[in-house]
Amino acid sequence: MILAEKILVYLEPLFILIVLLAFSRGRYWKQLRATKAYFIFHFASTCVLSFLLTLPKLVRISEMHIDYTYFYAYWGTYLISAVLIFFVLREIYGELMKPLPEIRRLGMLAFRWIMVISGVIGFVIAFSSVLISSHSFASMLIYLSQLCVRSVSILELCLLAFIALTIRNLGRSFRSPLFGLALGFGIDAASEFVMTAIGQLRNAQIWSAPEFILQILTTCVLVTWITYFLLPERQEEREIAIIPVQSPLIRWNDVAQALGHSTPRVAMGASSGFFLQDVERVVDRVLARNSQLDAANSGTKAG
Image 1: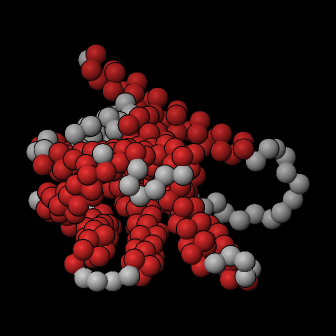
Image 2: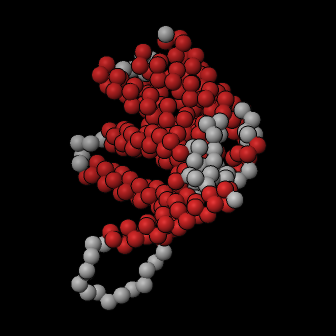
């Protein structure tokens, strides 16, 4: 089992290189810049970590120096990868929601606030670790990396669930490379949660059964990406996505557009109604307008 795990670990850079080459063949190579940066960084960091594992066999160096170097290289790339994945998820969402600019705007705003709040939390943790002498830099790095990865993993699962539920209404199919990206990140996040819990219960080492299973799942994610990037896209997905008229997302986009308009300022006074009444009136107007359009379309078809 240890031999099989080592083979998968050393083959991982090759799989990532194939993913990178397959991704460069598609039209998203120039559009998804954060995804491209993530794959390049993932390939470079995996090569460095694999090289550090084989370095003691090439040169005479103390095991302590190798352990220290590998420790900081692993957790440093772990943290940077979590930050890059966040921008990849934001990019995937933005690309999928292009036909619905108002919903897209609200979603991108939510991503921005998540980034700001996460940055503040990370700064507070780092600053408090510096003040408390009992916390070493290594323990702070591990805690901060795990916190970021778990937060991003939740976003990965939420994005996958959202895309799986709305992919048809967005004018896409499950063969879309965007869905393939979200699927791969979702599998990676789920396996990370499960295997981390198992590893903590059994106090797993680097060459152990939980790590071997995690490496198998990582390889499955890479194979999934390779398959999606090599599959030919449907002709209709190469063009601008057309959302079906009956899609409820169009109505919600109208609601978001209506809510996004600034209202004129008035003098402050006693409120005569609940503030959600304004929102309800906007929704009623949008739904009434869409009902009239549906009735007009039905009349046209009947005629």
